[in-house]
Image (cartoon, rainbow, N blue to C red):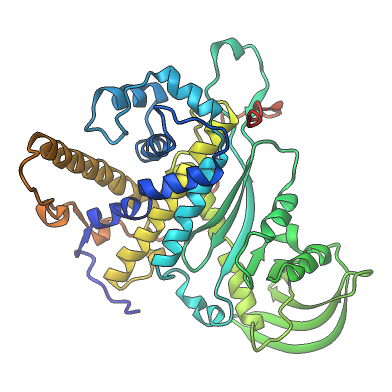
Length: 450
C-alpha cells in the first residue's frame, strides 16, 4: 500500500455511515428473531425497533433514556425509530426480552461484514496470514459499575456491577469476531475462554496474555483445532530440548527453544525468550514449525495483542459503555451488543477510508472519526425519512431516490481524522471518583425464559 497521501483530500463520510444500513437490515434482524424465538410474542417494541433504538443511543449518547424515548415518540425525523408506545412499555420490553436476541443479531451482522469486507488492518502480518486465515486475540473485561440508580437504592452503599464481557478480536479485520456477555462475575475469564473455543473458526491462531499461558489451556486449544501464542506464566515449568535459533535485533536477543511444557504434562511446544536490557519476556506456542511461524513473527504478534485493549477502551470511552442506562442484565446486554455492532461498522469504515487514502487504517483516530460519523448517520436518517414521506404523499408518482452522496456533501479532510502521534505509556482509564474500598454487588440476573 502506498504511504504517500494528501492530508487535504476529502473523505466521504456518508458512504461510510451507510455501512450500518448495508448490513443491519430488517431481514437480518427478523431472521435472528425467528431463529431464537420460542414463546415470545410480537410487541410494539419489536426486536427491529429495539435494535435500531439502542444503535441510535450508541451513536447519540443521550443524557438519559427518557430524553431519547421522548424524541423517538415526538419527532419521526430523529435518528431514533419512531415508536408511539409509552416509555413504560419500552422499559418493560427491555426487562423481559432475552438479551440472546441481541447477541444473535450481532453475530449475524459480524458474519455479514466478514463475508463482504477484505481484511485491511495489521498489514505487517500478511506473511503470518498466509498460514493462518484468522488471527484472533482473546481477552475479557469487567464492566464499569452502574452509575445511575433509583432513589430508593441511594442508601445502599454497595456498588452494582453489570457483569463482564469476553471478546474475540480479529486482528486483520480490526473488528470484533465475537463477543460474549456474562451477567455475573461467578465465572472467570478462563472459563469463558474455554466455552468460546468451540465457537471460533477452525484453524485460528489465538493470542493471549499470561492467563492463557499454561499447558492445560494450550492443550485445550490444540484439541479444539486451533493454534496458540500466549505469554508464559512464570510458575509454569518447562524442560528445554533443543535450541532452534538465536537472533539479535534492535539491541534485543531472541531465542527459540523446543521444549516440553509443564512438569507433569510434558506438552510439546516452543518457548520464545526475548531479552531486552534487564527485562525478559517468554512466550509459548503450539506451532512447532519455525518455518510456519518464526520467533520474530511471534514477538511482533504479541505486541499487536494490545489492539484488544484499545478496542475495550474505544467501547468504553468512545461508545459510552462507561455509562449504563438501565440496571437490569437484559438492557445492559442490549447496550453492549449495540455498541459492538456500531464499533465493527466504524472499524470497517475506517478501513475503507484508509484504503481510499492509501494509508494504514491504524493512522486514523477513532476518537476523531466517530463523532463525525454519528452526526452523518443522523443526517442520513433524516434524508431517508424525508424521501419516505414524499413517497407517501405522492402515491401516483414514480419517484427515484437520489444518490445522497452526490445530492449533499458530507465530507471532512483526511488530516482532521488522523491520529495524533503520542509518546509514553498507553493511556489508562482514570477513576478518581471511585471509592477506595468499594463493596460490590451483582445486578439482578435476567429472568428465565418461559
